[in-house]
Length: 480
Image (tube, rainbow, N blue to C red; front, side, top):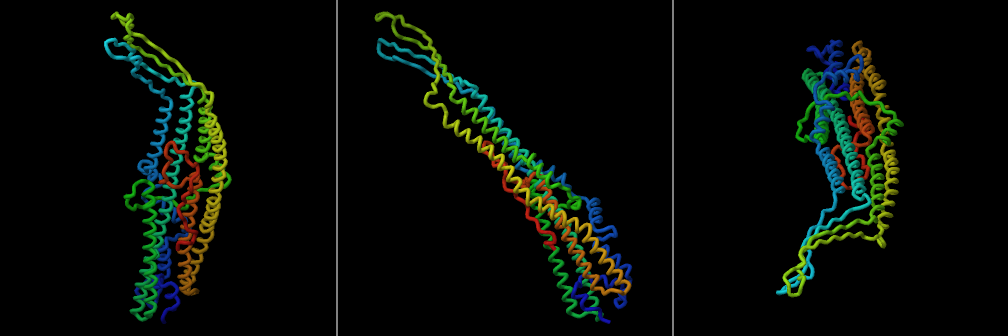
């Protein structure tokens, strides 16, 4: 009797398990079928999630820690951040240096002819800054140095979190390729079995064509998954600073997701975020500039001394001249009209602006954290539901259908449908885990995600909060 055509139309790629003996008409050996089906999908009686964890623990490949070490050594933005610190240190040193003295020539009452005469010599002039202006100027640039150091800490977190997000996205793509490869192998076996059935008259030409279509779709899905894995790897290689690094297997466990408390996570972000620290240092810098502006009206002392030869004759008809004479001058500028009033007022306004910036940064961090917290909670709930209920139920349904089929109480199409549903749920589960890790990494990393974002140049007032460049993630179940 010819097998039910619906089986080959519904899911012909799995029909290889309907014929595991050389006797095509009997289609017996159900125990061997059961073992083959279980092995083909990587199933175990303890559940698919436990099997995934065992595979991760036993596999070899690059770990997250190794990639973070590579990024620390090769990501160029970290060297840029260190260069910013060195530049700020140079400005601190420069701000504390005294003005250079002036040395020059001085001459007066110079005349020629036989009579001669005049005063000619040299002088040295030095400006003495009073009121602690050098110390206050250094204090301004010390605050800038602290901002540069906070910027370097921020960049380190950006690189670390960028590597972590790219790692788990690449790990998810790697796992998706493995699932697609299993499905592709099943499709090839299904096509081969259908052709064998066609040769013995138990399948028609439409069955073969449908099996061929299913095999082609499985092959295309595998190619697409491999391309997605290569794309994710290219992103990871760029973040660690080694763009030519060849595609390498990754070692990790997607299911070991972190548990975050929303309120505690938000408090940690508001307390420890480098953006908050940079904003507060902005207030300190503005206050230092105000103190420096207020000290500007203090007069500076100008000292000038020199030595001259006075060639004036002591007697109109004599040969004796006055000879060497010295001189000294001292003066200060009197702050009558310009007491730096405008700069002081501007500095006070800058302090108020910087204080408001601290408030704005806290609000922006709350705004940016809100969707990530919501997305994390939703993805975590979906992943937990898949792991604890959906996947075990789907696996159990499949095994029950398979048992009934072995006992002759169920049609094989029901087994195929349950099998295909289980695979689809596995793919959705991987997507959900990827979303959990992406959002959790951003939250644990204080909303710093782009490992190739350029640090702010020294001397430039940084906007403490930048746009979060979150990698695009798909909704659970979206990548089938």
